[in-house]
Length: 280
Image (cartoon, rainbow, N blue to C red):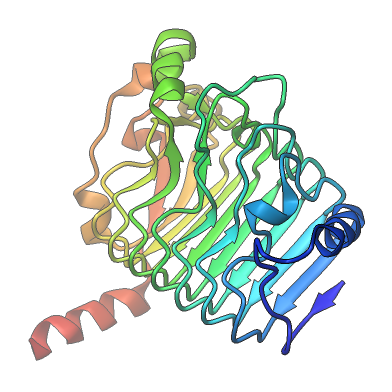
């Protein structure tokens, strides 16, 4: 489905029949491209979609909608986005989040969401504060493979973690870390406010590549399999040397040690950094 210029918000004053018709269509959509709308503030307002939301959707791209505030507003009372595999967002000048936070934190873990979301790509969303809140019924961490974020200047944390879920992670999860068992690639570029990828410490045993530029506030990488050093398969990290030298580590027992990673520093970025330093 393609939604472009001319589309407007479905408000809470719209007729019940109109909302029901839109709900039926959107729940069956498998591919959604929303673009160039100067009026919508949310692709999926909570008052329109109710408890479950867009469980047929597999691919979604949202771009160039300057008034969009929250891309998807949902209360997470029921399964949401169960078949979504790939999400793209670009040039959303006012968007503060992709998915909203749950209002009620007493969520049933059996009503899980994001069961197939393998890749998230975000580009040029300068006001974005976070991408997704993680709670006990969120399975994204188990399936995510690729995270690619570029030029989102206000972004401080990619994944918020609700306090109740943080406490469960500390008490029940291995080494007090949230597992990302299928995460393979991280691409983080020019995120000047970024402090954390996730509020909980991350463990990604299959991590293969990390590309990071211009994320000077980020002080930690995700932990990984401590056997990588023995197996001779460290995680490849492309980054600035000055940033790498300032990273904080928890130690080998936690799978969080510099010897588990193989950093490389591009000569191009070295030269550019040197020139910018001299000009100041």
